[in-house]
Length: 146
Image (cartoon, rainbow, N blue to C red; front, side, top):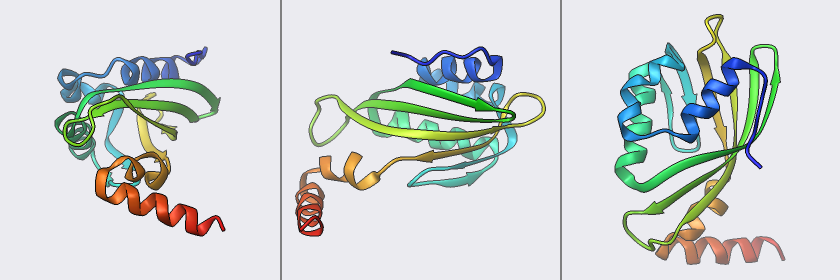
């Protein structure tokens, strides 16, 4: 069941993330501050242009990327979103992939995102799905669980 919230800032962010297209990337300043900080397992950037570059790269590297926000918890100027990220690899296998994760957002006084930190397990959610490295990651996981 998709997330819902009475907080207008969060509702706006959820709507933007769930309907994000390549054409929306130049308009991310509507939800991110000019000096926004963004961090995920692959990126740590500062500034709106750098955040836009992360999302532009997502559209360059993947087919049909989209977010489905599952839950939203809001307290003051902070928010935690849990989400599913659905996409298809442009290379490798083409079936629909799903990454489960969470985002910690901190809002600026004007309601835009000043801090965006994504949390997800790159090994389990991504590396294991890649052809060569996936076999190695699955083997390491089995060895570590013994």
